[in-house]
Image 1 (cartoon, helix red, strand yellow):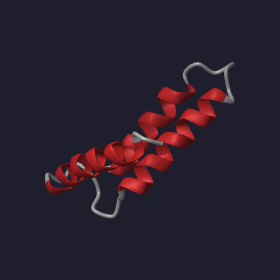
Image 2 (cartoon, rainbow, N blue to C red):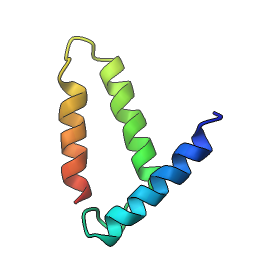
Image 3 (cartoon, rainbow, N blue to C red):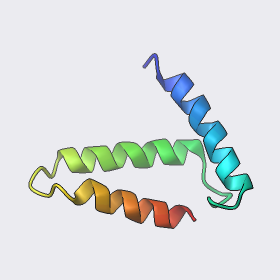
Length: 66
């Protein structure tokens, strides 16, 4: 929990720059990204028989952010 605030602040700055450059949709929030990251990690942990799952979900997420 100690790293949550610095991670959130750093991520928000990166997200803002990506949105300003047009690389990421304007309606995406840092909270959205943190939830998605957590969801991908949990899905991968719960599916050890599918080592490619995290990569597939991340690619799908990245495409949806544009």
